Length: 197
Image (tube, rainbow, N blue to C red; front, side, top):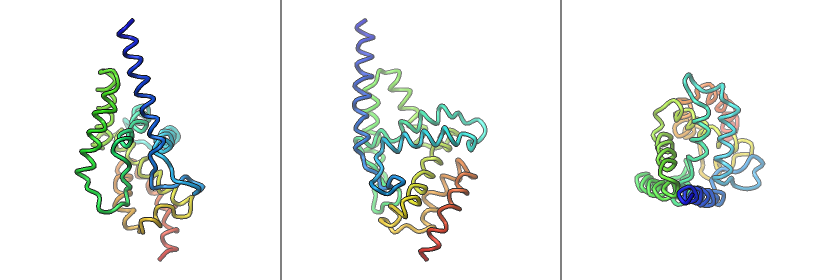
């Protein structure tokens, strides 16, 4: 009974700890533009993207794994913070080290079997090489442009983003995991950028 209780306590402590993800403010606004999205909301929204857009996934993609991946992909932001995709002067190596330390601490709170499994899933997402990870990353890239468009520009104005910048930083990984979805998202956002030039 003690081992089971210890396991359950570790799981509950982890679940309470990750509630902090709701305090991590992202660069993108929510769709109505009234405030910035938090990372907890972002993770939930992406899980819904995977559920609803499952037919955009390539052959062999496990939507169940993608949803699990998306639910945990930003947990490290609790310690490492969010790195806006359109930010400048970001030390990517330092950010990667901070995220690895955060993954050690946060996933390490769980019972060993869950810690290993969830850490591996997070690392798979970060590497972006499997079909599941490519689709998950594509969804992660497609959601913010839709929110920015819905809110009238959102973080695009804050960071002086151009369509070329979007094509490079967002479009390439999105197209790699969900080409038809990215083509549709790009077609939706292009008029906003055309109107600015």
